[in-house]
Image 1 (tube, rainbow, N blue to C red):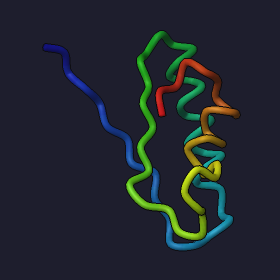
Image 2: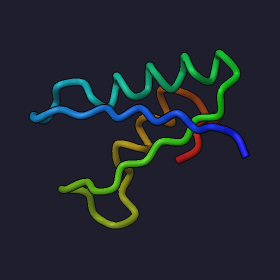
Image 3: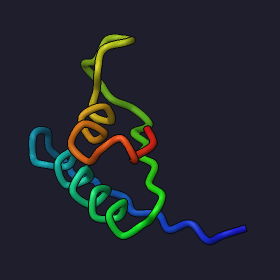
Length: 67
């Protein structure tokens, strides 16, 4: 079993850069050879099947990020 590091990106407002920050950190980790998974336990204002923030992170950081 290997150790898993967890990084939590949080903020109290909307449209303040959490998604872009998450994508940047994920891209750097992937470039360093790390396995990256992104989880957003809840998101409001998105209909089922509609792309959300995790889809945007994968778009920005690359397909090596696991949603």
